[in-house]
Length: 299
Ligand SMILES: Nc1ncnc2c1ncn2[C@@H]1O[C@H](COP(=O)(O)OP(=O)(O)OP(=O)(O)O)[C@@H](O)[C@H]1O
Ligand SMILES: [Mg+2]
Image 1: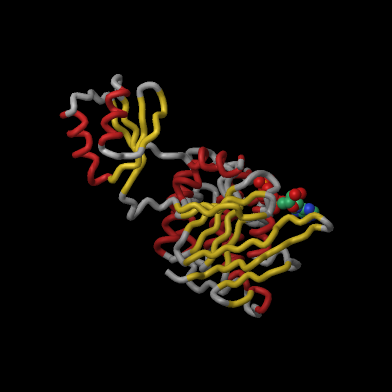
Image 2 (image 1 turned 135 degrees about the horizontal axis):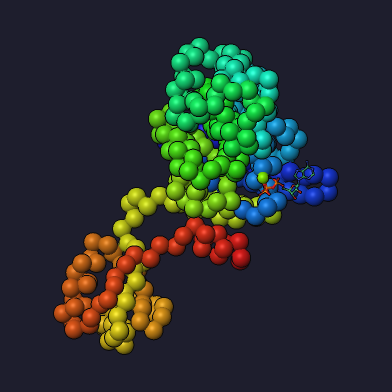
């Protein structure tokens, strides 16, 4: 996987207020990165800089190793974005808007439009005039427009904002699909952390204009896991872990947790039973993104 987007030491001032401070970010082709942080952290500002909507800033942004300030060709081909409420021609239908955009972007194969309209599930209303659209309808049309030319980089600022929860899984599936099939790099912001957790490979935490943490969500290749053991005989279980030299934490009066090699878990449970220690439950403990967020932002 090669790097497609690089943000290098970007700082942005609005007047005297510094809203971004030395931001570095790198995204590979096909990678989906979540951008999370409190209101006013600088997410939209960063996304606007990457898409060229804010031309004045310190530092550099490279797409495919080219500084975006040096690009002479149409930027619509390189980067697709939905930032805030997308602008459309209200008197045209959704389809006509897409067609218009396809034409100015030089898209040859118009059948792609129908394919995207179908996978986003907007065919029911794509022939209605945009002025009659609800917020969520516009939002989805915005995503269609952003991916129309299959740009190598896709920037989505709160794309699920205002969307009916029944639609969200479809949008998520669509975004994952284009990341995988078209090798698109996606940077997506949202306050709905469960959404980010389901969709992203990595999460970038931003606070007061600074990236304070990058967390890998991909679990592949992970061999050990935190496991909770629940028993009414906690004393005996603790003793057992002590004699086996397995480090652990007691988390309640009937539970302890330990980092365990998954391949060895079955044998461990067997030997606990052989030691006459009854187990009521053994389960993997996963920290949710919300818990990670609260920890990270609280520090
Ligand atoms: N046009 C502007 N002029 C002056 N200050 C601005 C402007 N746009 C944003 N800001 C300020 O920059 C900071 C970052 O705003 P930004 O919109 O990037 O935050 P955000 O992380 O997207 O927040 P939210 O989660 O609420 O969307 C805020 O303090 C905001 O007040
Ligand atoms: Mg924002």
